[in-house]
Length: 222
Image (cartoon, rainbow, N blue to C red):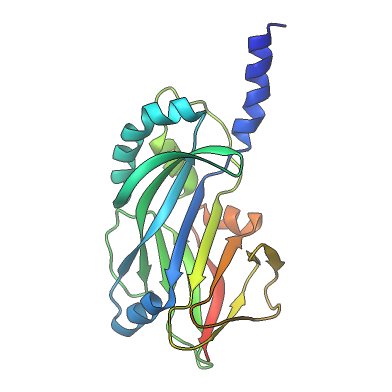
């Protein structure tokens, strides 16, 4: 068999194993402000779309950014990167931090929803995917893009405690700083000025990327 054909066939599984990524840092002071006044607040997030290769990414990056602008506010420049073994187009967009009653522009892809504190003082945080990821990827694809199935989206949220005291989190079925955590597991204490990484499990990601809201943690101020 022709070596070029073999190389192409070997490359296909690698492309199919790629996954879109969404990553953002959530500052708890922003969450408190939104809960206090009910007004949506925008914070940066990174949207990463799998690409066939670095050259293809660079050639199509400007056109991709223009397409993203039709779906969400673009707040920064785009770039082509290699991350976790994947070639990705990375574009900075806006992520809306909201309450269940907040109003915000429909031209958004994601919202971080903070529910008012319950009787025990716990605030529930959910990531709401406003448009199914499959629809987003199709909308952003170029005419020459290879049709492929992607792994579940990687949702990565950094929770930064920029408040005045420590907080306690009760994460759901996620990875906390790389370690698996089940709903009802041990709470996590986040000290003032501390930060943790919450990464959705494949099940949580598959659920969220269909256009659902996934409650990934509750949080209580100590």
